[in-house]
Image 1 (tube, each protein chain N blue to C red):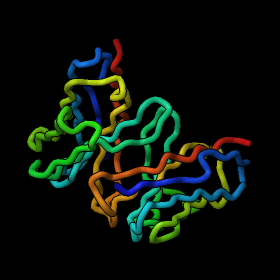
Image 2 (image 1 turned 120 degrees about the horizontal axis):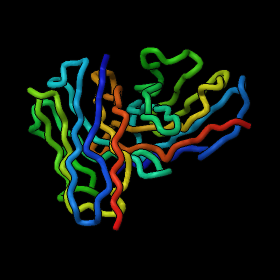
Image 3 (image 1 turned 135 degrees about the vertical axis):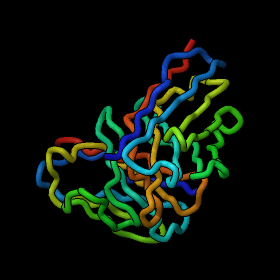
Image 4 (image 1 turned 90 degrees about the vertical axis):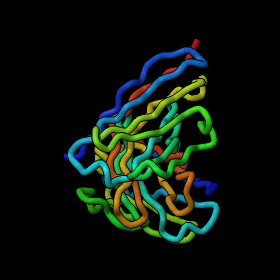
Length: 108
Length: 120
């Protein structure tokens, strides 16, 4: 199975900050990497797919990059509604689909 | 509007069974592969099972293989998860999830989840 890791596991930031989250795959997954946002008590929502493509309706302050084993999710200017947990997911070699352990972004 | 609505969760004792249902609407259910993903309290996301459009190909996570059975009824726009021999470690919110047609096949729509609690 492909293992996914994320760093940091949590971070504290302020509104307006630039935030970067890293995801690493245990082997080459090309760009089969997706990012999700989850708020407490809610289902995850798709933000980024194919490593860098913005899903419909997602604000342009979110961006993704990377290929192979190393990927990043960037929020260019953190907004109050962005305080949430973020998960990466690989869909290159399945089953199983695997997720990273998540990164929690909270208010500094 | 795409909607996925899960039901069937609840509190059961170890060894008992539950059947989860997911009612899909707002899209042509029969042409999408579907998944179940779970999340234990305070933990991350864990893929559980998948089923292709026709139901012919099915996959399971190692943790549930042999105990859980996924199925679908395209005529009724419904997805199911039969869970037998439940264990405490199966306690989680279970999400019904649609696999998109986008590049790299991300999960584009999720239900609100149904909580399964396994405890004596």
